[in-house]
Amino acid sequence: MSQLSAFKRLGEAEEVADDWAKAEVAPSDEEITRARRLVRRVREDRDALTDEDRAQIREVTSVLHRSRRHIVGLGMPRVGPPMPDFHPGRTA
Image (tube, rainbow, N blue to C red):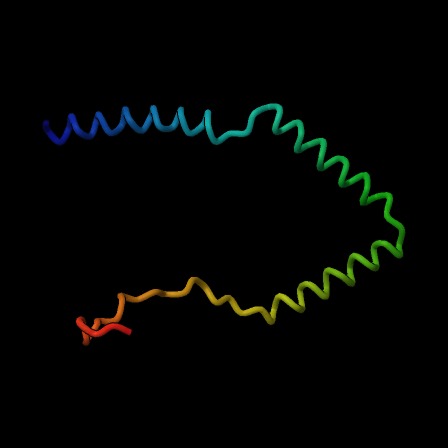
């Protein structure tokens, strides 16, 4: 197979992959409608908050932000190869 024909095949595969990705990744109309309804409900609930509610939310948010500054990410532990057995005939 020549380089040109391989390149053409790759381009065709990319077009098929693009169509598949758009169909699979893009949210459905129902999902978009549900998300919009949720955003609308949150905004309505937010608008109904009292000044005291808003102050409590600001305070809690501030505490969370301060506490997160002190968290150290430990990451995943690294597991090395097993230690060699220097006494293969010996039991523990």
